[in-house]
Amino acid sequence: MNESVNCLVCTRELWEDELGRYACRPCERRIGDTLAALAGPGGLYARLCLRIQPAAGNTGQTVSGSRSAPIPASLAVLDLTANGGLVSILEDWVTAWAGHGLATIGAGGRLQYRVDRAVATLRLNLPQAVLRYEPIADFATEIRRLHGQCQHLVNGAGPIEFLVQCGCGHTIRATLETPHTACRGCGQEYDKAALVQLPALGRAAA
Ligand SMILES: [Zn+2]
Ligand SMILES: [Zn+2]
Image (cartoon, rainbow, N blue to C red):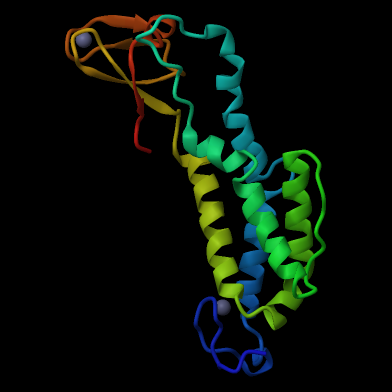
């Protein structure tokens, strides 16, 4: 039970009928909405997974030769969508909540299934967690951060940019969505196939 008179998440003073809760009602609603937005076939996780598929479909374009490097995929997207990323962060919270009798730990399955199941058990137990789970603010912060990261990568980041080096030494910023790119140093034009033959300098900062 919260001894303080403030919501631990947004720090506003609790209403009289909220006293004893760790999080106020609007915060509970926000956390629930944030969780819900991550899961399901139209959720942020599923949409993030879609972003790596065009690159995965391009594996026929493997680059040969010693001076070339593979196309740097969006590491941020890969990190978040892979095992160990978003799914594992959610499951770690499920484990922590389960220790308080607030969640059911699932086992195995495809990544999307695991995301959906973790979100479902967290949402189901959220009304109890705001009453009994003191680190709810840490949970809220991490879920919000995850949500923000996903949303940025899904909506705000645009096509994934990467950097290659032209023969003239100039750095070219390119995306796999643009069919032709000209070097701003020497004017040389590259199509997609030629572009990926250039030495890679890494992924452009988002
Ligand atoms: Zn609050
Ligand atoms: Zn050039």
